[in-house]
Length: 327
Image 1: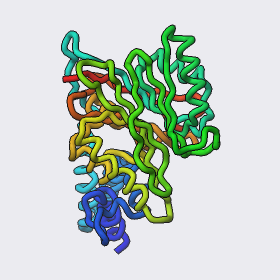
Image 2 (image 1 turned 135 degrees about the vertical axis):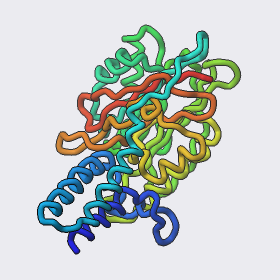
Image 3 (image 1 turned 45 degrees about the horizontal axis):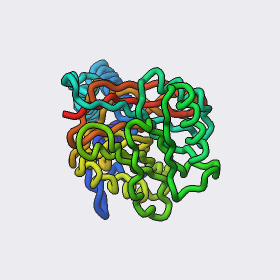
Image 4 (image 1 turned 30 degrees about the horizontal axis):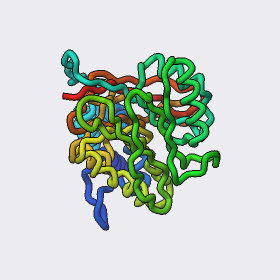
């Protein structure tokens, strides 16, 4: 019975984003499945080994092991589903096509120094930097440092609904090269409990109106409480995916979670997964990198040609960058 309970729990966890839950949604929007599914690639590999070890143990005892077979098969199928994320499907940009490099860097409650952001911009060639957990004042110091270092003007935009220096995780900001013609768009009404968001249009990038870009930070799924706010914040981004926006930030979800899959289903694609970087973790605890929850999502005419992950000195997150081209 213990073996069967373990096998069924393992299968439910690995495939919880496909299991219907009471009240709508999927089982992965119910704690603790939400948190466990964030570790899906690692869990799948561990469970393959555990299942094979159980089968070997049963064979030595000349016993049957259907529970361990179930565990192994479900874990192998999960591995097969996530494995393509290490294979790049990106195509090179056509000569002369408009390009933009987008970087997202969670600054851990505005605790990252401007020099760190300047270094990240140098290494990636970033044009747009999404800044979850960053106050408007702190983003302004980044823009001034980038202006001095890069020899061109950068502008900072903060979430208008957040206090400039509240020292919390709520504010979201963005810094952008002035040459792209950033124009602040109307910000969405923020429901109770939601974190900040910044929306811009890059009016001088390419022909016509230029792409719309949003720096986003959906709330984190609470370990022992309802996941409704987390799911609500993620699903609220679906209209942006349908409209061809570029989204960057700390999504507090992996692309295995059903609310993130809902974004992919309506037109967004994950730049890291498309370019073979989809299994690189971007956040962890106790110094251990565990899960890829920071993303650059593309949609509409914009597609990634390259992406990567870099450390951020002073933050518990890693930065994610993506070089995008208009098709």
